[in-house]
Length: 284
Ligand SMILES: [Fe+2]
Image (cartoon, rainbow, N blue to C red; front, side, top):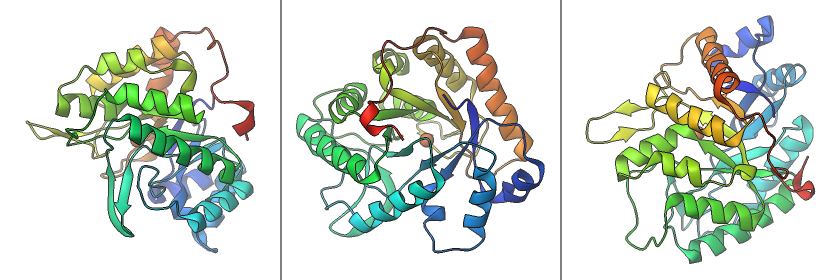
């Protein structure tokens, strides 16, 4: 349990290094630091000296049918060896196929075949990375006619069979529930609590007939209500505020993280989960 953190963004590098604000931890976008040297790595050294971090990626494409990118995984492992993140996360999605990158986090068909495919790849990735992988539920705007189960059954089965953690993006659940007309509460109620290691909290845009996961607004009240439901069910889970566009002053991000803490302290389940969230094999 890292506590209540904020995504580290370029706009706040100087503020964080100079003032060491009171937040529990930072999540960093792995790809921004997979470079040979320069300012970004210096900043991360400075931040890591005072805060725990987790590494969050966008390029693993764990669901694709293309081979895993071994060079990417090696670079990610080397970055993790150096900065010792609590864990590494990426999205339960695919981002390209046939060697072409679509630069988007695309949903998978919820089928047994897709489960087998992704589970084998996650096991492989965790072996290479030498530390736990968390998979994050993405927001989506389409579904597959081939799906035979709910999204929550899909992610739960993958986490159990691959022995990995879940990064539950509360906002993404809300967005997808609206877009596909499913019950967001049922999602929270169904996910295996012992697998949930981290939350994302973010804002979205309301386009009337659909919601778009834009990370450019404050967290909406409906998403806070869903977070409270998760806090009641899952107990203490590391929470992280994501904000990627119209990024406000750091203080607003820190206040959002504090609100997550306050909701947990008022409503959260204080009992520990029956078993550890991740197997010892994959702990850092
Ligand atoms: Fe997220």
